[in-house]
Length: 416
Ligand SMILES: Nc1ncnc2c1ncn2[C@@H]1O[C@H](COP(=O)(O)OP(=O)(O)OP(=O)(O)O)[C@@H](O)[C@H]1O
Ligand code: SF4
Ligand SMILES: [Mg+2]
Image (cartoon, rainbow, N blue to C red; front, top):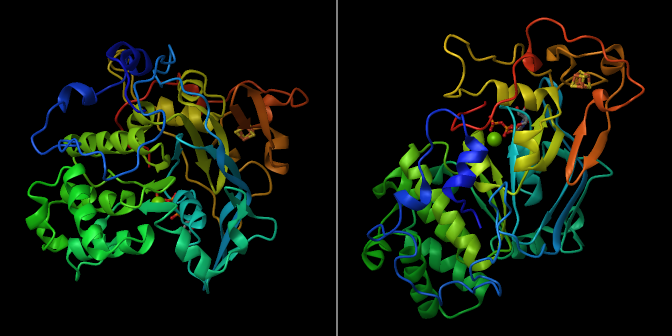
């Protein structure tokens, strides 16, 4: 589901700076690579896993009938009690996700991406976190915010699984990887341990771990960073969950290994039809992998839409600023990048109006006083900005700032 032709990639990231690795060409027949085993019994396959007949002309995404909505998040609010006061980490986030879809969540450090992701699995610290009264997370029609811990445990791993940036802290370094894989498979797939063991070996082979039989007896610390990510993905995917949440899964890896890991996601999604929520700082990764994008700022979603909508027609000054701050090969010589000046607001006391107002070159009086609501712009594109409201008078753009650069195209560049 993540593949794009060269032409489509070129269109989307034309002009984008350092050339991103071309996944399909770079990694065709890796020895011991992804899917090298050709085994099909390891994971149940999706019904429509054959090559899609059509691809969207602009974005290159395969055109498939839209899957059912499996996740609906409505007005999610999360705060933390700390010694310094109450941190309002997530402030009214709403989005939905369809089966087989990849949703990227991007935004600067501290904007609430990980807290949103952890909320979906109810993995927040019980004693210091608080869910807002109207917060709703509906998973296949069930309200997750009301589920008991026992029911949540059944769901985690089996239906929703999470992949973190650092396998060493996410997994148990004192157990062999075989033990960790077998335990999850036996528990969630309800098979005897001998069968779970066979499936575990297959799974390791599927994600490209050479000599999987022997590697089952090793500990996480004995693997390289890229191999550890593969193992974490194997564990997360081993029960064929309907949703994989990946929080910065490639941030700690070099670009070649990143490409291999993203390739692995693509293969798993192709096979199982899982939906993916991908949290990343890397807009290059977003351009190549996502169907839709949510841009977060100070605990809110400020813009959402398809990759094409966001990269071609960014409407929120923050999104425009992120894209303008990316290096591009075609920039006029001598023209420097335009970083977004300023810092995000203090989440202990967020401003009453638009959280971006202090950094926005288009800020108006209304922006500082009233929070802009999400407005639909057609298609799936939506933005929360007073500039979209015809009642708001538009002042001329002031001096240097986020919106003064031309919105760029994606590059393999970190934004946070
Ligand atoms: N357990 C916690 N206790 C108190 N505050 C927290 C806790 N976890 C997160 N926060 C705060 O919530 C806000 C959002 O954090 P979050 O980890 O979601 O950011 P992020 O967007 O994932 O950032 P990054 O890109 O750096 O990972 C931050 O202000 C953070 O300090
Ligand atoms: S609402 Fe106002 S301050 Fe906020 S991004 Fe839009 S124009 Fe800028
Ligand atoms: Mg994070």
